[in-house]
Image 1 (cartoon, rainbow, N blue to C red):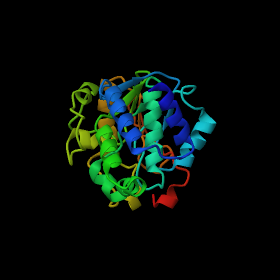
Image 2 (image 1 turned 45 degrees about the vertical axis):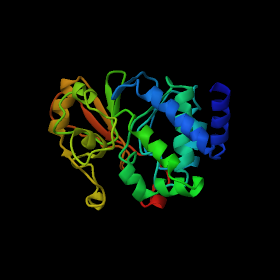
Image 3 (image 1 turned 135 degrees about the vertical axis):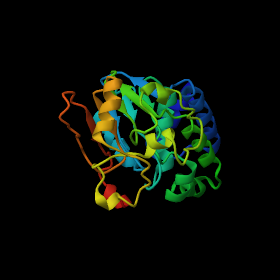
Image 4 (image 1 turned 45 degrees about the horizontal axis):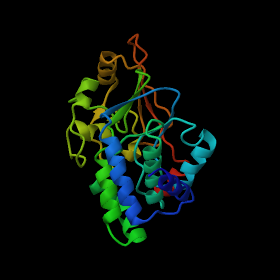
Length: 269
């Protein structure tokens, strides 16, 4: 698949969709790679950690221009690859092709928009229909979503997750035990990892516009992170550049929220 894959990557970097049959083969190969990965991926530094892209392809290309292209730079993408933007197909397929070509140099974890239900509402389903004339590409991509990791730990110190923590999870080993190969449930630990938010970090204007399953407080964060010797928890779904949560406890544990999109307001975020 080597030369074909390199050609597909080159084509996708021009924001040109690949054929439906090529998408099918790419998704099958990606699933073969992702199924071998754990729920919590171990990532070594140095690594460039990236938040929500939401189909903004040209912002992704600008990121690669500034930060370096794979495999020169090691990347961790934190989910929400699709929906809202105009180029979700090209964005996700490029990242998927890079994952297949350089599996050790790019890590993809699942966001709350990597979901059949959500993508039928926020644009990815319609985009696939418009660009390919059927729902096949959407269906194959959704099958890949089910195999994406739920989180990552960088250098054994930074726990990265799209959403946040869960009242039903006290250790990373409990996350590793989740059966992730499914559509995102409406509740429970897996849902919380993709949807929950730190209490106090959520602007009031967002309070009723997003599905927040669990608002975790600093005391809960401290309990979990100290138990796992994790010094920082990094999450990505909201337009807050950096939200540190400090307490009087001597362990300087942080919960940080970051966002990638430079034109988020254009997407209504």
